[in-house]
Image (cartoon, rainbow, N blue to C red; front, side, top):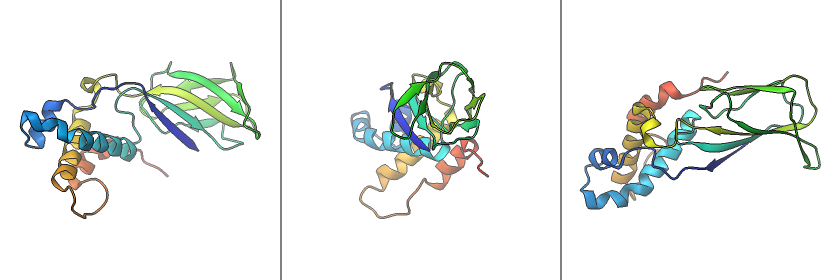
Length: 178
């Protein structure tokens, strides 16, 4: 399954005051922490399979998908689907105007009414909202904690991945996979 994220909003996923306070920065140093906060947000998004700030997600399955397609990135509203296409082996895409329905929520799914031997491409909107105010507080704190670890550890070799506290805060948003 191929997944492509396209950012549609330019908002920070956390308030700059949280980054300033959590990283113990003066107001004039906050700009230096921006790359770390954005990198931490992307890491949290991938760790939890979420879209923090509203973005467009495009998912393309392999040929012959199940009739229920788990779209992996949420949350999404029930009316979030922009397009559903069948993709032939030569790459040609044909819009599928009917024969499917979408269930949004934290773990969105596309339901095909009939099986197909083509790949399916779905484009939909996901995210908690357009600004940081819509992002759950525990995910904001996880971002701030991960950003602090990156900022404080600049140039130091360390273990890859999220700091333990950030991982624990974000854990309830992770998807359980079989």
